[in-house]
Image (cartoon, rainbow, N blue to C red; front, top):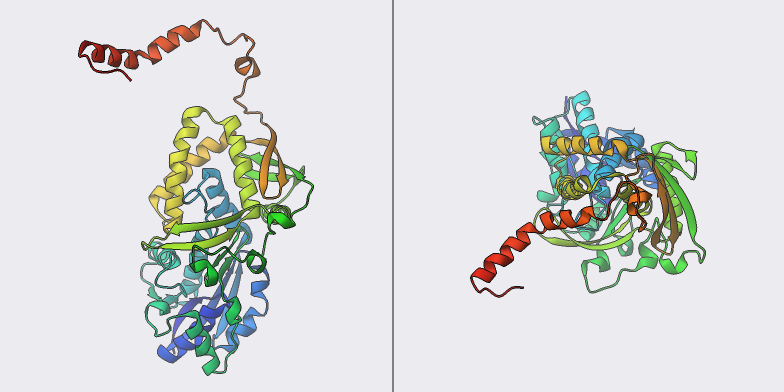
Length: 405
């Protein structure tokens, strides 16, 4: 009886090549696994594709809601953004994909897990760190680090030489990754940072600002403990709320990002990300935090957000530190509940008001008129104490004839 390997399968170019390559180079039964995190039409006819290229079976695991509730919402609550731009769409999906791959590998008593990540990318790290954390005894096969195929053109030729279908045209061979949260694009003209992206050919979830409506779109979002629960007054499940926000945001040119990011392996790469619904949620959530979190908590949370983004980007979801940071975030999000109104217009998100039962804004304090809780005369003593270190420093400089300022 042949030993088994579980392949992370998408039906795209790389994994279409990997199935016949595994059968030619290893004495393995290939079990293909597609984890559905919202790829949409990419899953069409997937079973026929997998079996026709040599897989013994195909699992399609629908984890869309779990992806949103257990991975996206925890990341949203931290406000994690990698290098000030990237909303971590691909990075967040990898842990749940790895989790399902491991579960099926254990169920099938497979010896190894195979992935189609390149030797230059981040995903190889995310997949393999996840496997080590969940099932350290499993072998990992990474064809891009072994085989003689050097490019997407080589991969296409490999399939053509064997009479197998090529799942894309050469002139459209962007490297893309899609899920409910976003779609990423790499390759072709994007590899030259001096060139402008061909947005007419590139965009899938959004339109350019020039094609967005000339009238703004108004929306209202309600959050409960940092998680969106209603859109325009309607209670929706996590998948539905994100799908609707993607549609609304996409029509209004929201969430297009062009970034030169630092990969984990040390090089820079350029990507175009479309995250329409996610971009709306991040801004809405931040506006609510401005209303509900005190200054010290909000300030410290910025440090947490940066570290959380780095952990996810580097494939370190299944680590004690990530779990601890999520615990901190869950605690401070207990009062981040309320309603936010936003105006969407040609790529812009404009706040239009926020309300919360946990609001820390007090009009009597903030008003220029004197309120009951604030005595203007108290400010003098506060300033004297707060400025005492500066005053002591200045006096020392005077004593030693050191120039002030």
